[in-house]
Amino acid sequence: MSMERIPVLIVGAGYAGLSAATLLAWRGVPCILVERRASTSPLPKAHGLNRRSMEVLRVVDGLEDALFAASRTGANDTTVIIAETVTGPAIETLVTKMSLDATRVSPSKICTAGQDRVEPVLLRFARENGADVRFSTALARFSQGEDGVEAILRDEASGRETTVLADYMVAADGAGGTIRDAGGVKMEGPGVIADAMSVLFEADLGAILQRDGFALYYFRNKAFSGAFVTCDEPNRGQINIEYDSSRDQASDFDEERCRELVRQSLGVPDLAVKILDVRPWRMAALLADRMSFGRVFLAGDAAHIVPPVGGLGGQTAIQDAADLAWKLALVVKSHAAPTLLDTYQIERKPVARIAIARAFANYVERLLPDRQELRIREDEYGLGETAIGYRYRSDAIIADEIDDGAAVEDPLHPSGAPGTRLAHVWLRRGDETISSHDLIGRDFMLFTGPDGGEWIEAAQHIALRSKAPLGVCRLGLDVHDPEGLFLPRLRVSPEGALLVRPDGFICWRSRGRSPDPLATLDASFARVRGFDTRQSSGSLKATLVDAT
Image 1 (cartoon, rainbow, N blue to C red):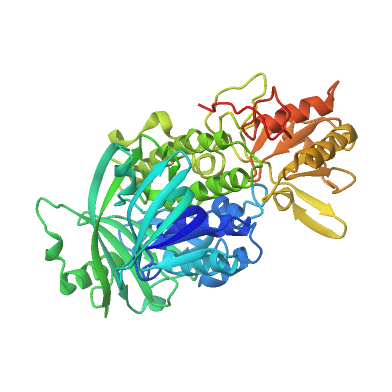
Image 2 (image 1 turned 180 degrees about the horizontal axis):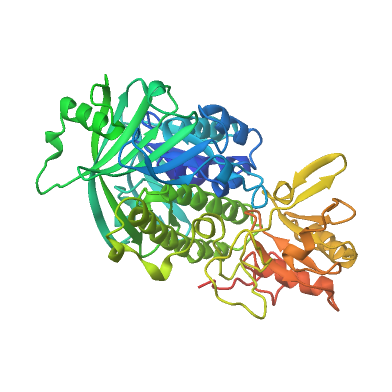
């Protein structure tokens, strides 16, 4: 049996696994991704990438453009309607292209590509950046010790087994994955909400739909409850219809019944329909009691199953991967203490919880308004706050003296508080207009006001001594803020400073001057990377702090 050594092994080539492989490889971390299937998903199981997902992916050169190129429709070209049927009058129009203009919130736009288009793009960029991706390869078994994970991989065609020794393993093996079971992880929550049938079909949709672009219809129909969505292939659509499993079996949905369901959903009784795929699935809501054990980290559906009403499940998976990627990269390269990885679960589990609550709210509001008891009110927030306004709290965040404890903030009114996402502001760099988010992604970034020269000198000294990735940006020198929005939105004075992590979240803030900027920044930069601030952050013998 052959043996390989790798810093990170990823299991599962869905949104979480492919995003992790892409972002790790882009950061120069060797990784192996294995997938038991022979290819990426041939079916558009999920549709669309929201702004936050696009933000974490756009750091890879060319990836944002490639994702938009994979979509049949343009950025933000989305319509979401509640109706009895597609051709019937709208009960409520939830989203239009005009309503999605959010240039005050993010430099990114919504991409409507389906999963069958997104996964091949992520795969291409993962491989181009150096990830070793192997399909038809299963994780046969694994064990872990203090020094790493020993995994036995099996080639599904030949049966040949290979041993891989990895420093860390990312379990992105989906809702039905088995890795979490090996770690004794339990899934908790409401469980199965409804049984549904997914039907992929071809029909003359151009003659039915009254508008171009991506269309999503939620049905409030006495005969059925479900949704219709357009796909990236012209004249191809997908319906998801709930059914009563105590009365109907999955085998009852033959092609003729599915054709009739398509006609009823579209409201066209004599429509010619070609059925391409039919498969049952279960809408569920579950959250792992732990998102890691030892050197194994759960991501995506392996860690949380989000009802697919609003598309937050796929977004949460991508953002899990992004959070893991920058933290693993720093630890693997010895730029952070291993205890930084303890913050993954602490930060990401609350995000999954509010995503599940928002999905329940969407389900009730859009499909079953008489089922208000299903809502999880204590974790429910607005669409914008849930998607892009969630906050982090962990030992990798140094909170202000006064912290209101809010789980989210309104992205239209950013506070600049540690634990919140960096506000998007349009800046000028030479003759170029850029977003504040164009200055982050790979390294930590220290932003200062025009009178923050002492902070810049301190950061340059710390970066030189520690060899850790720390960049600097001084307003009025490196970039200009023509509208004067950046510092007010972050609530920092011209003498102040702000430290932003590679994922775009603020981890430390000084509103003004410090009597000792070098010592203050040195201790803060060490702490947000998991080092004990009693020791120099540049010392190889720094004592580690237990982040739990």
